[in-house]
Length: 139
Image 1 (cartoon, rainbow, N blue to C red):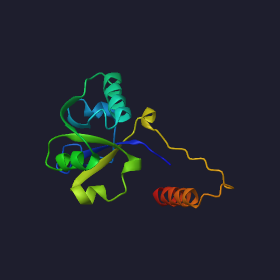
Image 2 (image 1 turned 90 degrees about the horizontal axis):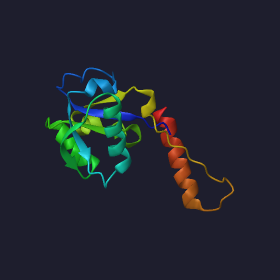
Image 3 (image 1 turned 180 degrees about the vertical axis):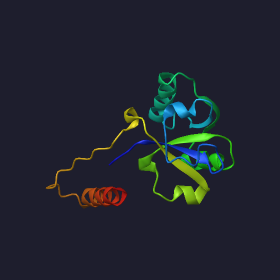
Image 4 (image 1 turned 45 degrees about the vertical axis):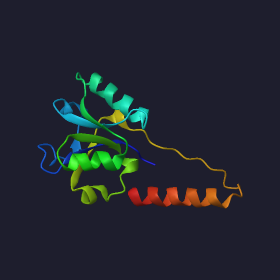
């Protein structure tokens, strides 16, 4: 499954008209981050990417889940990171926000799934089928 970093912006944000952004474009922005214990991989990764691009991320808010973060983006409290694997294509409409792809090649963290087709566990087969169908829908 393709899984790349995205950024959620308020609809009226100066960068919201762009479909693709680079991490360096975010240098002067304020962020809403997930609490580190909720998602240490994302938090550590975006902080490191900020440093790699010559700036420290300024986070004014920390949230416990994606719903809380995107709600705060909608009211203009900052920008929030998410992975495309979290985005079911309804989030922009649901939260009245804009989601842009971050186009730095190093930001991709694709998900690879392997399954033994001869395994007899029906739940695993259904899960695999769901993932495969979702992946086909998103490509």
